[in-house]
Image (cartoon, rainbow, N blue to C red; front, side, top):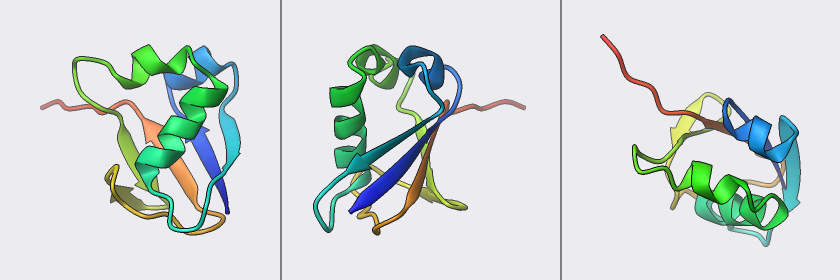
Length: 85
């Protein structure tokens, strides 16, 4: 199945692109999509493994977690987790 990964700041700067399409087997999870992304763009490993916390992941309008299975054609958005007040 094809998963379209949309990279937010600062992730797209490491990859040199804002969007990457990966092919994964049926039932693959968000974590597997991230692993495939790192295979294509190894410089992302340090950004994605940041000690301040993992990135926020969204499939469409819904927040997902690493163990969430994805559907064919899913758009997975990888964003810097933010907090504030």
